[in-house]
Image (cartoon, rainbow, N blue to C red; front, side, top):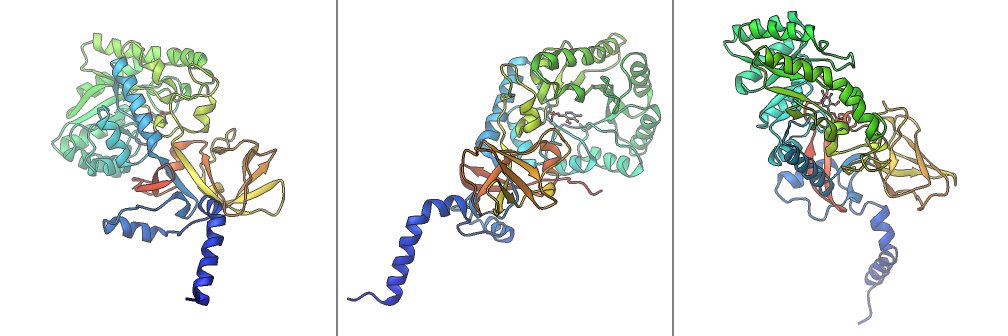
Length: 416
Ligand SMILES: Cc1ncc(COP(=O)(O)O)c(C=O)c1O
């Protein structure tokens, strides 16, 4: 039978599709899926089978689950062999599913930075919260008390006697006990009372106030986290943390009921774990990593590679008029731009650098690039600074290889 005009057309179209298939699959969205369609598939239980990264509308946050799991496993192994506890910082990911995986791997709880993060994590069943920023003012204290009613093990930090009195009054009025760590400043002059006499006086004050339960010290040396080269970082952290640890030992000697000495970062996880007196680490960025951390050098090399960059921003090339550059749809609004020295790094390509071309535009500049960049191409960027970058997005697309397998949400983003 003679094939119909329609059959001929269909066959020729599929021949064209076959000839160009590899390019189409790599470069262009196959089906294209809106957020609503993806949500509907998840809600109806259909799942995301067949959905690939190429189907997503950029810019989006992409999380490589294999790398995330390896990072969580690597930190858990370190914690186990170092005989120290891990209460990882949830400010990095703001994501319940990641917190749950960290706890499943052995973490004793979760640090959070804000009351909103605390509420969201607690509502999802995450226990053992330590809120590492001072919650000052009636609205925050009221919300803290409400949270402690539901999760009595929650801990707050304090670096000021007046604030301690306010917390004590609120806890007394609510007829509950509030767990408190003294926030001791290792020298960053951000928050915290200086180590030594002032910290001891505040600890004694807190111990004397009704309905406050002194548990220990919070001492986070943020200034040590990214010191370049491992040896310099170790010296920095040891120098800054020693007075804090001496204060902790002193409080113990005085018979104050302190049992928790909490601090440390991804940059110092294999330094602070060996410090005498440290009881738990608060590392956060190790789950995702970022350009800034990779640049500060690891124990065994110029690139810090103990943990893998699992989180990327995926963008699309939207303009390519000139031979030496291309423009993407991911600019200032898609990246945290606070680290002037570090720009997003293109995954899987060399000879190309990214610059910001405006709110919605990124500019790729070519200098003998290792691959071609065409209109519609998808590009993934390792992000300069993971924590604030996550706060820019309300969802994280989880992938295994090219396949999108889940969608997780960020919780407790800024806004009251
Ligand atoms: C109080 C506190 N603890 C822990 C961390 C985790 O540090 P990192 O993400 O570098 O591991 C941070 C990060 O800024 C922090 O502010």
